Each structure stands twice: as structure tokens, then as C-alpha cells.
Image (tube, rainbow, N blue to C red; front, top):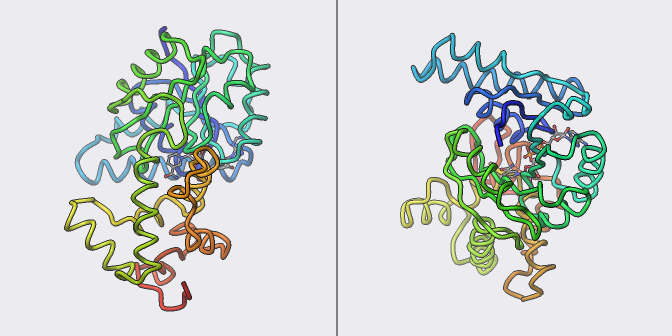
Length: 295
Ligand SMILES: NC(=O)c1ccc[n+]([C@@H]2O[C@H](COP(=O)([O-])OP(=O)(O)OC[C@H]3O[C@@H](n4cnc5c(N)ncnc54)[C@H](O)[C@@H]3O)[C@@H](O)[C@H]2O)c1
């Protein structure tokens, strides 16, 4: 299937990144959100990223203008009906996503393919909210989207071969490295990473090492580019918890029980970089250890 025009529904951290890589690959992009200030914030993020590319000598001013001009910011979901693919990138909330897909299903002709960037919600469940489960797949990007190469192409129970191939080829056109993954709790990378994180939280709870030393150990001992706590702050702690809860609800195996430390952190409202504090304190503009937490 020839893809020319893409709607990215949700213009936040991930949505703006996906819109950017799609436009940079030459696609016409409609980036939609629910409030004008949010969609404008997404456009500003894209502009800033592209200008950084110019400053680093990776992009020309012409590339930046051409990419930027290919993105139309909008609040109007109905523009999806003229798109070939809709990539959903809204909050990690099943009800919100299901409602959005129901609306999209009514608006869009049958041939339009739907993809979700969900981190944890089963693709088969989201697809079941539509009358096109065969034209529905997971397209799971990693953050920051313009940098990270992997895309998991998730086949729901009824995703057709044609849809899976179309989404895989689309990811390749975005300059990404796709892998096929069957629908299942946490898909692949988040499942493996959740197992690692649970062990890390256990080590923290047992006092095996501090947050800073655990991060150092995994960076310099296993060559991870970021420590697990740094990464958690970067992604958002609530997203890590959503993944942990999905694994727990599905497998009901104590090894997947969400960490109490993580639950407390999310309950406190400290979600990472976006709230100024998470496992570290960023309020001074620099990453500093926290001394105010009673684990
Ligand atoms: N943050 C990550 O590292 C990461 C990685 C992979 C996948 N994801 C997934 O990507 C999705 C988005 O995450 P994010 O970090 O970009 O969140 P975010 O909070 O930065 O952005 C979400 C955006 O969706 C918008 N939105 C909410 N409801 C909407 C609706 N009905 N229609 C249109 N827009 C709506 C919000 O206004 C917001 O701008 C989630 O499903 C998340 O699990 C996140």
C-alpha cells in the first residue's frame, strides 16, 4: 500500500518526535491534539530539534524548512479521513485510546490503517474497539524518537500480513529498524526491561547500592547508555508503572509484581524530568541526587 499522508494523533513528547521523523522522511503529516497550546508546543519542540540538527551540521536550513512545512498542526480529528495511516500517540490510558479509535473508525474510510504507540495496552484490545482489526497494528517507538532506531511492529491477534508489512516498511522509510513482535504484555523490550527494573528496585529496597551507584554500575558495567533510574526519569515513572501493572495483571506471577517503591514515587507526583523531580532532582537545572525520600 502506498502511504503518502499520515495523521499523528497526540503531539506530546512521543507524538512530536514521530511527526518529525515522518515529515523528515518526506511524508505529509497532520499532527493533532486536543488544545491549541499543546499542538503549538509540539511544533515548537520539532522546530527546536530540527534547528539543533542545523547547529550540528546534520541538516541544512532548506531541509528544516521543507520538513517543518510538511507538518500541519490541527485540533480537527476529522482530517484523519484523508490520511493513509493514523498513528495514535495520546496518553497511556485505555479508555481514552479506545474512545479515540472508535471516533477514528467512524471518520475514516475502511482502507485507512491504524497504529498505536502504546507502551503497554494490548493491541488486540485496542483493535477490538474498531471494525478494522486486520488494519490495526502496534507501532512502538522508543524515546527520544528522532534518535532511537528501534520500532516494534506489533501484530494483534487479527493484524493482517499486509498491514504488518506496511507498518514495517513505513518504519524503515522513517529511518528506523523494525522488528516484528506478537501482541503480549509489555511486548518485547518493555517486558525485558521491566524484569531488569524490578530487580534494580529490589536492590535499592535491600540497600545493595544507592540510586546513583546503580546507575553508574549499569552504565559502566553493562555499557547501558543511561542508568535505569536516569532512563525512568527520562521516560516518565508513570509509564514504567503502567508497563509493570500490565505485566502483573496478565501473568499474575510474583516476579512481575510492581515495585512498592515505584508505586510510592508515582503516588507522590514525582514522575521524572517532566515534573522536575523523579529518582533525581532537576529543579536547579542540573541532575542532583535526592536526599528527601524515605524508601
Ligand atoms: N514517553 C516515552 O518514552 C514513551 C515511549 C514509548 C511509547 N510511549 C507511549 O506513547 C504515548 C504518548 O506518550 P508521551 O510520553 O508522548 O505522552 P505526553 O503526555 O507527552 O503526550 C500525550 C499527548 O496526547 C494528547 N492527548 C490526550 N488525549 C488526546 C486525544 N483524545 N486526542 C488527541 N490528543 C490527545 C495530550 O494532550 C498530550 O499532548 C503513550 O501511549 C506512551 O505509553 C511513550
